[in-house]
Length: 165
Length: 190
Image 1: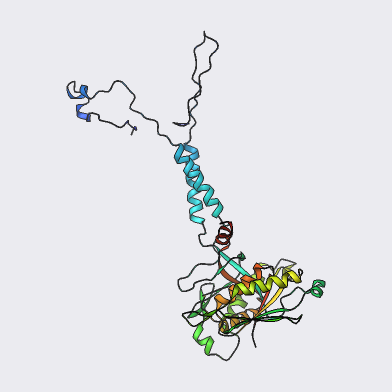
Image 2 (image 1 turned 90 degrees about the horizontal axis):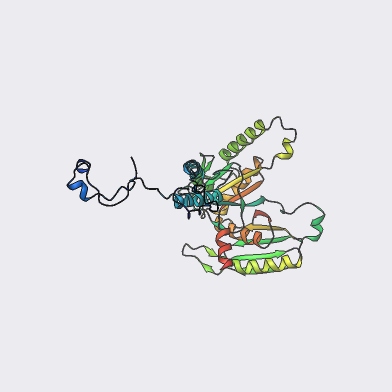
């Protein structure tokens, strides 16, 4: 390679013969051409914004209709202006009040507590995968997404969204 | 043009001069210098590796719009090709075509959004036409729709969009979010 690496020592041994240099020059120009083309292609086709999706079902219970349902309970998170209510068909009903109001007047939901409560339910019912989020009309998309994200994070990926009330 | 060694050398017109040209003569060394291209090849290789890691075979499904700020999510899945319903503070757009004004939707008594339903039905017809020779067409229909809404869009708009999508046969709603899983993984490692 041009200019690259230390020279390879010449072979000795037969004193009579003329020593030939063992340095081979590798033509790197085609490699550079190939790399330049690849870089151009990849730069043109690069996707810089990483967008993901949170899958939800509209209405219904969101749970799989199979024998697993027997080992599952109905978990509902009701999102409102004053906070969240976590209720299950097993009789649990927990109020999670909002932490306060944002400068825009929107409630700041206590997602940490919600995650902890959902984790407890998941530990109690390991087969549980369904959750229903019932949101009031004034709830913002960002809050809805955060609640769904928290549910998926604790292992409840079958989320369905309905309107509260 | 040959690559020459750096340093003082006579101008072309003095090259033949015994007086000026001779003073600057530095022996009979070759004027061609080898250019070390190894660092450049290294850098290009690293660039290729970085860009290959960023590469997405599906391409850009959702385009970021000025008036739509997406929320962050840490547990999102890879986005798939499906009709995109973009909801900004002022309008609802499907595949780049405006179908309704948000203010009108809020004022309206009807739960469904007629323009959106019509457009989504067209999208479904197109899908049916493309898959007309597929014997498992009904089974392969997943009914996915991507909703790209601004952070501050209220649920009263979202529920109407979701209801309308359901009316048009799209029951699997995907909420578009900015993927923060890498950020979360780094924070966890720290």
